[in-house]
Length: 115
Image (cartoon, rainbow, N blue to C red; front, side):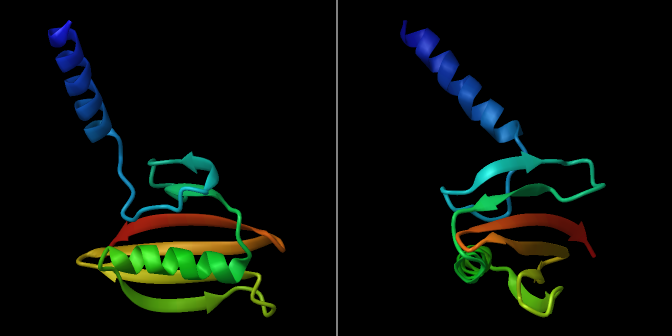
C-alpha cells in the first residue's frame, strides 16, 4: 500500500511538472479559463469576478510580484473598458488584455512573446 501511495505521489509530481505553467499566479476566483500553447493566439483567457479597475490592480500586483517590469498601458477604448498592458522579464514580454464584461465581471487574456 505504501508503495502504491509513493507511486501515485510521483505520478502527481511529474504530471504537474509536465503541464505548461503560468508566469504569474492567477486569482483563485478566475473562471472560464481556456489555454492555448500553439503560439497562434493568447496563452490563456478567462474571466474575473471584479470590476475592471479592481481586475487591473489585482493582475498588475500578481505580475509584478513575479519580477516583471511594467512597460506600457494602451487604452483600446476611450471609456477605459478595454486595455492592453505590457511587461518585460529577461528576454520575455508578457502582454495582458482586460475588458469590461459588465459592472462586476472582467475578461482577461494574456500571452508571452520572446524578444
